[in-house]
Each structure stands twice: as C-alpha cells, then as structure tokens.
Amino acid sequence: VSQKIAKTPRQGASTATAAVQQPRLRVLFGEIIAIGPGKIRLLELIEESGSISGAARHMNMSYRRAWLLVETMNRSFRAPLVETAQGGKGGGGAQVTELGKDVLRRYRQMEKTAAEAVAGQMEDLKALMADHPPEAIS
Amino acid sequence: VSQKIAKTPRQGASTATAAVQQPRLRVLFGEIIAIGPGKIRLLELIEESGSISGAARHMNMSYRRAWLLVETMNRSFRAPLVETAQGGKGGGGAQVTELGKDVLRRYRQMEKTAAEAVAGQMEDLKALMADHPPEAIS
Image (cartoon, rainbow over all chains, first blue to last red; front, side, top):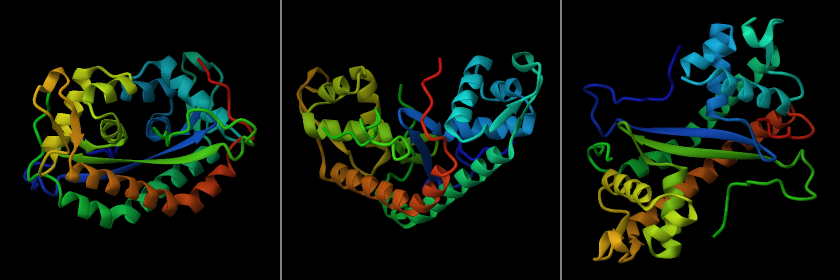
C-alpha cells in the first residue's frame, strides 16, 4: 500500500525541502462530495484488499462508515464504482468495477495536473516559510 | 463574508451543472499543515472581524482551537501572519499582517490556477456522473 501523503518528514532531508505541496481535489455533486481524498483512498484499498471491511480496517474506520462512503460514490456515478459479492454486509468480498478504476485513474491524473500547475507558485510560497517547521502545538 | 464552498445546490440550477469542482490545497511543512482550507478561511475571517474570537464564532470553533491554528500559521512562516493587540487572549483584537495578506492572495491564486488546470478533466469526469446527486445516506 503506497502512501502518497507524507505523514513524517524524511529523515535527513533539509526541512526547507520537507515543505510539500499537497493539492487535494473534491468533486461536489449537489450537497454531496462524490469523490475526494478519503473516498479515493478507500477505493484504492478496496482494490488492494478485495473487501470493504479490509479497506475500512486499514483506514481505522468502521465498516458502517466505509459502506456509507461506498454507497455515496456508487450513487453519484452512472453505475457503481464498487460491487459487493453476494453475502454482502458480512464479508462476501468487494471489487472495484471498470468504471471505478477509470474514476480512480482520472482522479489521480487531475491531482497530478493540479500539482504541476501550481508548482511554480508553490516554490514562491515556500520562500516565505520559516527555515524549520514548528513543533506541534497543543 | 463570501462562501466559496457551495454547501447547497443552487435552486433551479440543473443538477448536472450543480456538480462543482473544488480543488483544495494543503501546504505541508514537515508534519504540520502550514496552510490549508481551514486556516485560510480563518485568516480571512480574522481580517473581516478584526478578532480571533469573532472568526472562531463564525466557524463554530472554540477560541482555543482558532488560537492554535493561528499559532501554527505564525510559526510556519518567516514572520507572523496574524498579530494580536495587547490584551491578547481576552480579546484585544487581532489583525492580519502584510505577510498574512500576501499569503492569502497567493493561496487563493494557487486555488484558481489548480481549478483552471483541471477544468477540462473535470468536465470529462462529470460526464460519468449520475443525472442527479444522491440523497444524503445515513
């Protein structure tokens, strides 16, 4: 499972280069978020684990919550992005449909496009940032 | 206070056009989110209301939480983005510095750049979406 979101600075990396741009895209559909970072991550994990419950565990999310996110995605598109095998809620397995894979690819491509588009502006912004990231404040 | 994030579909608008692209940018700095949608919104509201507590109220956020976000922003940049008048925590008022206004402008510009860059891909994605947004599922 590849993690695209840097949770920790690379060790030994200069803190100046540890400032990372992270454009995140949300596609709203009426009042609903049809897809966004969380749903896309869930979709990827379902593809890898072959089940909603496995994906939910990876995300420290309840099965019920994951199922709701899947339902929302499925109803937002012309056809389901995830299909569950008979047996359903219990754990009959789930798979990402061809449409689901297509949506995944398109979403990741859009993220890439957005990141490339703002790269120059991001560099300018970095120049305004402190030499070192602050400690977490609480 | 202008709201850029559509919370409700426009009445009378076709649901197909109610699908709205919303690229959101996060700038990570080490483990810290230096700026993102929430902090930027807070910064705008401090600029408008002249106080951290006023901005916090608008966001249904505790004063303490808002103060922590401001502190994180202030420490992430070379100089503070928000300055509080003496009296401080109580409510001596707060103002967005020139650097803060500059960061705000740059951030909003990056959002615009990202949105424009993905506009075509977003249109293609919309074509895969259902005719109507789903009802909220719970």
